[in-house]
Length: 201
Image (tube, rainbow, N blue to C red):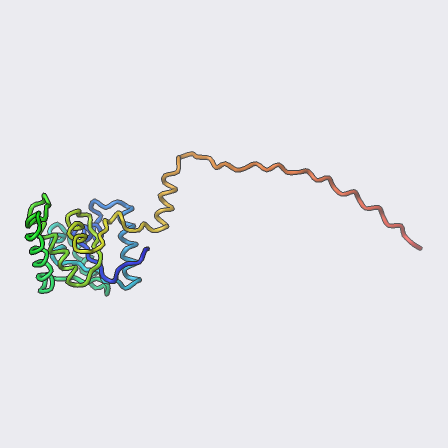
């Protein structure tokens, strides 16, 4: 995987895709698992905003909640509240939006309440030094990019080599025959038998 920043923030749709199988393709599942493996290996801090966890918990079952509890024990996972640092980051975003031509929505057509939640997620990440966000949500990614963060969708994460090989096998036409190049073999005549050596008396 290409180099990762030291701190990454994710949102509720990433959490849902990671902890459950809802709306997650097998490829995306492989991407997420590989991403988490790389995060662990490189000791990258991954921020789970509390506001995103609350969205996840609305429809989470017991098994999902138990998995979330286990996940929080990982040294690389940090559950972050909307604290004073995040409040300062959000206030700056709101001021910049109001000062711009697009008004408080910054030109977006989405409901302001949704925009504000997106900004809170990004603000939490910024307050903890995040340099990248992973989200399916275009609105969240737009907010992040506007503030200088790299933004990726789940499908932009690297697919592990093992999964690529499986995809190649699955995409091969059924019943396809392998073509081998025919090589003509030269017939080499047997060597003449050696003459018997005369006995000497």
